[in-house]
Image (tube, rainbow, N blue to C red; front, side, top):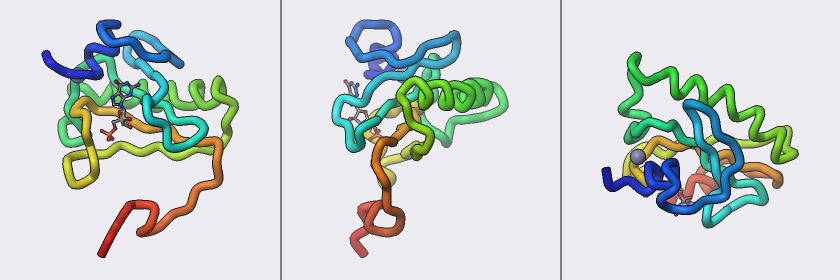
Length: 117
Ligand code: 5GP
Ligand code: ZN
């Protein structure tokens, strides 16, 4: 399958790994928008949140088990988890992923969502 993140998981495309287990792979985002910006992905191709179901939700649970370990390793206690689903939300890579952002005080509201109207 021609998927960037599947290629990162199998090592075809290099990445800076921050965590790996049987279900989960996590690596540094190539264009960080915060001092800590990791991407946490399932080791199974799931396109996005819309494709999560009872057959694959174990991967999502494993991701959320991994996140505190990743945050601890990155030295952050406070962080934001974001998963963009679909084009309007800004999903550019169609393999489910969770951005873990931290290391800076973040705002909230329409501006932070890039909302223009
Ligand atoms: P999305 O926009 O789909 O929510 O997030 C995709 C993320 O993947 C972006 O933040 C982008 O910087 C990151 N990204 C795209 N290509 C690569 C790559 O080849 N390596 C790494 N480490 N991150 C990538
Ligand atoms: Zn994939």
